[in-house]
Image (tube, rainbow, N blue to C red):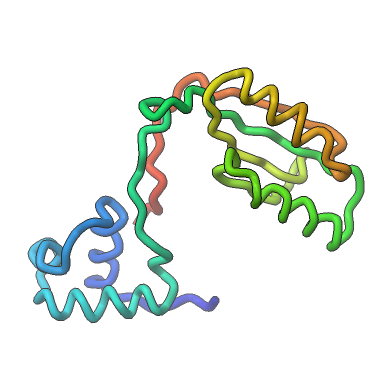
Length: 155
């Protein structure tokens, strides 16, 4: 997708919705100094352009019983488009995987996991990830603290 040009009002709408996606157009209008109907039209245009990809509630993982957050660096055995696609499809089907990225550096993929406990992490690694035919090596880091987690873009 090519870069879409946005003006200061679009920018303000995006910044506000990034902080609270549940804002109504009436609430937005007061924040960005446009009428609710203008906010509605602009919001719809930003959605249609793909700049707003969706809306979701941010949940408290620990409060919901997901006590382990880990990042796993995965090295694949060999590389080809078909093998990379196979691994990417496998990762996409795993509910514990919250994000996965093909990366540069000493790993091929960086995978973020949320699990209930260490037993669940061990099971995921030993019963699903390591047996995958494309996986050569893993390095797992367990999150101890999260001093910052914004999730948004620095608009």
